[in-house]
Length: 144
Image (tube, rainbow, N blue to C red):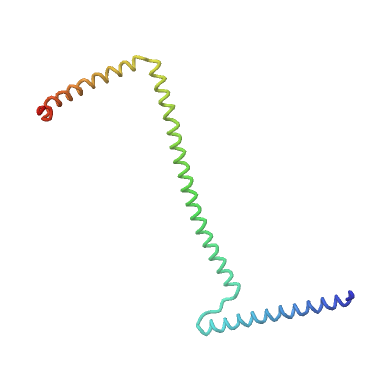
């Protein structure tokens, strides 16, 4: 083919494509017109394509807002969980440090340990005596 024939052939195809597009447009317009007639017959106001599009956009925005609220709630729960774990970890980290400080303090002052052992001995003596009396006077020990 020569260049002129190609151009003529391309122009012919462009025109046929345009005719097909025009035909599709007419078909879509006819469908919309019939839909509008059916809506009017049913007592419904026909909405334009723009109005339906705007309503769809509003519904999408509403759903997006609900999703954002749900995500914000989930994010807040995650942050609260992180904070709780951080507090627990800080408490766990403090316990050995406090124990070490207590040990260091008791190592420096032996009188504290000595006084504590004396107090424990004084508390244990009546408990041992009560246990011994209970054992001696219990019915099980009398049978033997």
